[in-house]
Amino acid sequence: MKNLETQVGIIGAGPSGLTLALMLEKQGIKSIIIENRSRDYVENRVRAGLLEHNTVEVFDSLGVAERLHKEGLVHHGCYINFNGVSQHIDFEKHTKRQVTIYAQQEVVKDLIQSCEERGIPVLFEADATEIAEVETDKPIIHFTHNGEKKTISCDFVGGCDGFHGIARKTLPKDSYKEYKIEYPFSWLGILAHAAPTYDELIYAYHNEGFALASLRSPVVSRLYLQVDNNDSIENWSDEKIWDQLEKRLGIALNRGEIFEKSITPMRSFMIDNMQFGRLFLAGDSAHIVPPTGAKGLNQAIADINNLAKGLIAFYQSGNEEDLTNYTQKCLARVWRSQDFSNFMTYLCHKQSEEGTFESKLQKSKFDYLRMSEAYQKTIAENYVGLPFEAFV
Image (cartoon, rainbow, N blue to C red; front, side, top):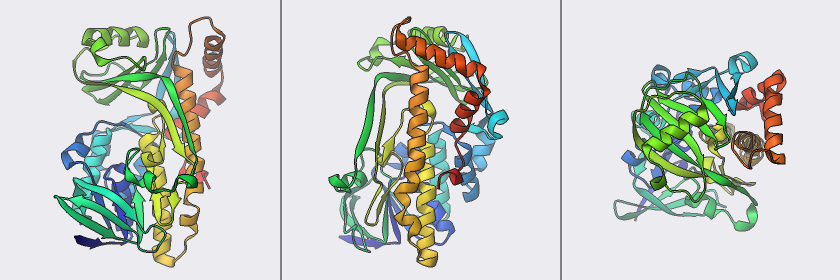
């Protein structure tokens, strides 16, 4: 068995694990990242594509945002439609901030390249099998790599390995409480070689279901349809998808080649404790939000901002206050992200037949959104992301 040693062992080479390693390296703190998937897989895994103002600032501070600024699309607002009636939400007017469209797989490519350039070890196809001794000052990560059993001895463990990873499973069951919602609908998402016919995201409620017009570049469209949880891709021809998108969005679309389509269930999940001993969870390992609010990746980076701050304080001065309070600091923003994601989900999706009490309430919320700048500002400041310092 080969034993490796470092200061912080990180499980997961997604945005959170890679960002943590880079933030620590900037302060001279060493880490090793292990990832159970191949490099090709993580660099091409299609996920979120919207970066909050805060997230872009973090990448700027790490010097990894050159391509992001060159290829990313800055958005100063979005549209929320209700049965063909549209309301623009002006981010710039209400917050002086904006969001950037830049695919998560491109973020990951940039972060991995930066880790390589800065000498941060990233071991791919390295499967963590156990996190041991987390209540001591020398936790041990057991993993297999290239058919060989290995360990990482470290001071702290960053559990950035997603919902199905080993990190959350290592926490004692009685150390946290779970909160979850399974929504009664899913998203059928497509990527298409088609130039978008819209300049900003469109969230659209329609009597036949929700639709979202997003994008990944000036020539690639990312679009979604609300479907039943038991629906199947086989039920959706390309022509049917485009027809429903145009009907629900109320606009004409360029119908390019659809090169990816999938159905994703909508859910909210979180636990109320993100640490145990010297193991700290971040991102999807601790919480999941429906994609309606575009908070998943951004909340993960907010977690990492808190964790890095605590680890840096520990190594520079021995101060453990920020590490002790890590969960408390993260959860304030996690609950805000959960609330906003839940709000946007219920505002925009069809939940009951037209004319019911619930549908009338939904219409009333949209009508209020159109008349109230205060309501518009509330959505804008949550959408672009409240500043890190707002959560103390």
